[in-house]
Amino acid sequence: MSDQLPIIILGGSDQQASTVPQQLSSTDMLTGFKGAAPLPWGRTLAGELIHRIRLTGRFADPLLIGPRSAYQDQVDAEVVNAEGSLVVTIRTAMQVIAKRFDPAQPVAIMACDILPSSDDLQEVLENDYLPHRQCMFWWQMVRATPAQLAASHWKPAYAIRPSAAAAPVSLYPGHLVILRPQSLRVGLASSLLELAYRYRNRDIRRRYIPLVLRSLSRLLAEDVRNLFRLQLPILTISLPCRGLWGYYLLRREKLTIAQFENNLARLMLHRQYHHAADGRPVVVSISRVLSLAKDIDTHGELAEAITAGPAP
Image 1 (cartoon, helix red, strand yellow):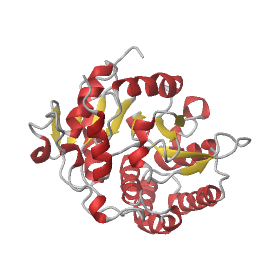
Image 2 (cartoon, helix red, strand yellow):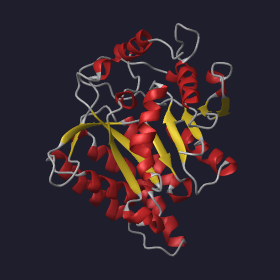
Image 3 (tube, one colour):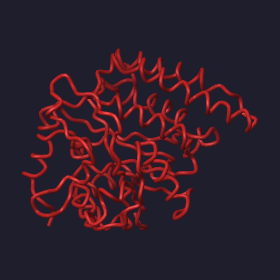
Image 4 (cartoon, helix red, strand yellow):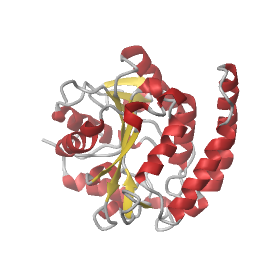
């Protein structure tokens, strides 16, 4: 990759308590602004992540989006103030991108509560992103077993088929996205991402119905906007139906990566980009970089990260 990618670090916090997984108790869970958690060697969690990003030489200087009250003087990077939910944080990030960067070019967005090494970041860029760098939206899911995730063994996995002919494999969501901002339905995508994040630790069987019910108002609002753009207002019907079919396939371990990508494209992208990048505008790479799936939600995961020590 010849040019450095702009990168945004999301440093917000849930306004509501996230779902506590069945295997854990509320006392196991970290609360507040996790990126501001202090580490024994003097950096915060977000500060250590920023240090590792710089070590790669692959990214422009990181920007952190989050409350200045939590991060000012706690990270060696510019902090753009955003007070509120994940939606507020994402929308602030998109406003910053619109003002500072070319919205047609790729921008990386990363959660503040992961600690991939610089080598991990190099690997995921070289092996997983670069072959698909013309796409509109790139993401990764990590192939792993619970034992490989160590302190993060409790996180929910999804059985998805790499191809229609392949057996399903266990995949964990990663926490690095690279996107071309002008292709996104920003308002709808950020609202639905917030809902997905809020319910991320809940059993998949108890997740779909609440997500659909809470999403309907967002879809209706987007359809009203589509009317004013002289576009058919079909999202309120098509996306829940598409989601229900995807959920059906996922529960039966028949969902393929290609089907998943297609559903994400219909959900996240403006219609004119649905067939971009040679018909694959959204790419979900199956990665082996474990650290991208290990977001730090618990005291045990934080202790494991501390044991690994700082980057040089």
